[in-house]
Image (cartoon, rainbow, N blue to C red):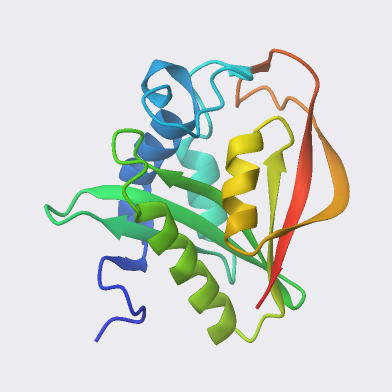
Length: 176
């Protein structure tokens, strides 16, 4: 029996880093991301969301997990990073292959993330979403996440692309 109620979802390992890297970069940045509805290509120029070293470092951090979604043909088509923060879980790097978006994979991954948080006895899941991504924010709100009112400036880091305008994150949270 799988750790998750959805057998397509499991905890990723270091051997999954190349597939996760490809997924994250294709889902967030560049022309390929424009095939999906969650692209940031209209806000951030470039083709890089993260690199292999950053993923390996994050994956090696105690308590941090990546959940992966494998399609019926065993291709990694979705992922999410979960990081413990006090009695909450920070959810980041949530991605579904741009050509697979809109088919329910994201809902399944989000459900598994919430299941994981409950098993870790967390009180809530929270995330940072670029405030300009109205459609994505509405998707999270429909799933029970609320705007905490907190805003965080999104500064360029030299790796993840040139911002086309000043950007901020909205902090969304859901009690578990």
